[in-house]
Image (cartoon, rainbow, N blue to C red; front, side):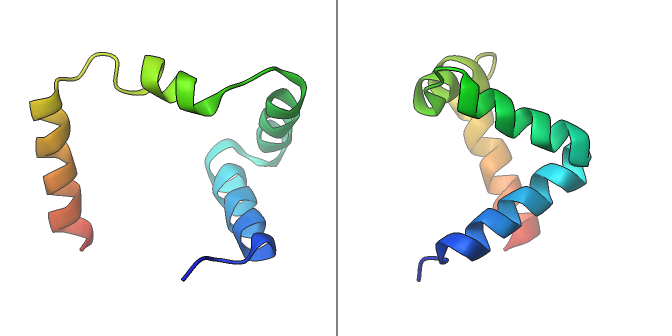
Length: 68
């Protein structure tokens, strides 16, 4: 079941605020809104740039083992 939009926005803001702090979370949102930004392209080019498929698979398996 998909989370409704209000709940998703609230959880997302909570994650950003908990991780970055409220001011930096607001700044992050402002940057995303004002910059031409393709998350899919960024993720492909930057997120796992220095990790092999084997290492990523190993880490994903470990995460799943620990977090169900």
